[in-house]
Length: 236
Image 1 (cartoon, rainbow, N blue to C red):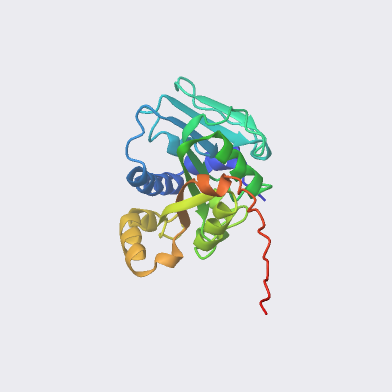
Image 2: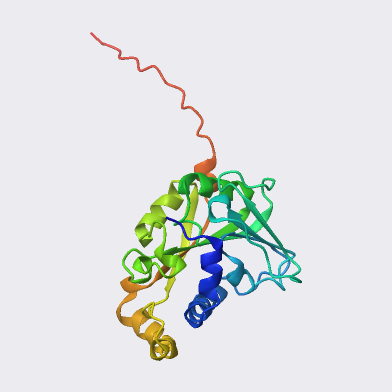
């Protein structure tokens, strides 16, 4: 079952949620350091992470799938939020330069239909960033966090899902190596957990991060190859 927006918001308001947000934001900022002048869409529960680019982007929209419940930006924020069906995004084709999918893939009723919709609204040179709970990590099995709800994925599963939805994987990353504990001692050692886990236990990350681009060649229809008649000549 997918986490709803209220549960996700409550999690990010806790010290544990704040640490998880900070660690994940650090990785996202390395992948997308500057989005000035670009249009950005966040799908799932992306508000904590869209703050990275809110002051840079010309358009920054948070969309929550209907099954997760409605949400909105805090009052006074100069951006937009909306709720819609995951396979019927209320945007025209080729509108966004970047799409961030966080707390979205694992909650999707149909991941392929949702990814095809993100493909539609992305510009031809647009990029998609997918953050998903890692099925080999601890966070995917801790239901007191939004990462512990829905369907976890391995890197390979995310890659195959993207390939089947006309995307080409460009880069991979990971985050959240610390245990999903509320203990202050664990939270204070978050930096050490991240450094140690990234070096010695990369498969045990809490989340996988996958950047992909639209595979325009895969989307192009293949012309039918005309058949040539083969004539066998018999000589005396």
